[in-house]
Length: 340
Image (cartoon, rainbow, N blue to C red; front, top):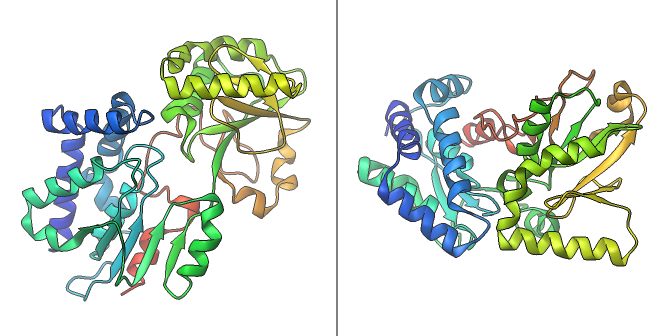
């Protein structure tokens, strides 16, 4: 397939993700039944965002023109290990490998078994030539390079096992917000989406906020209570109740509103249904006090205003995907093009 043919097929996939097709909805229902975290609503939101923001011809061509993608060169076999922590996790890697002209060897996560295989089957049905670009299996072998978003304690083992292959093994990351206390209600509600989307399970989710001394947590909690229906998910509610009990038993100081627990902590990552906070004196000193290693653990920094030395995004923007928002800020497409 030529680059243009691959882009056309990806754009068709984007249209499909934004459609109201019965088959797609059925697969989402099956996904939700298999994994209570991947609800139909969340699957649909992620599918719509992906289809709208980067699986369209304009975005795809604007992205691909930044790379020297050659035609008719022997493709490599790229292993992709998917995490399944949020709906369609890892689809961007699959898109990048296909756009670069390589072949994907995909290990699907047990947490999200149906959506991505369904989308690949659809692409094969629309253009049978694409069948040569994808292989799904429980085991991966015979690959030339590897991409994975598996995080945390597995990383040292992955790096050791795959050290002889070209690889992108992404580290554990989360997102934070730096508030100045002057945020509007609309901005705080947008921040709520950054916190609660996909139950806070993604790298994009804000797990910690930095606030000035004397910050009004009461008003923030009142606004975040708009997301109270999140506790209707039994898995989320169980985590909320467990962490609530844990804080009580350990005499941890906390604030709560029925759907989120706030507690002061230096840690970036918070438990499910929890949000860490830390006080600061001067937002302008963040770029100085945070070293490179610390920043590597952060996917997005959310702030209503620019902060010198830091790359920030506005509240509500963490769930808007872009082909240029690579995991760990490592250019996946550049890595793939250079495999030739």
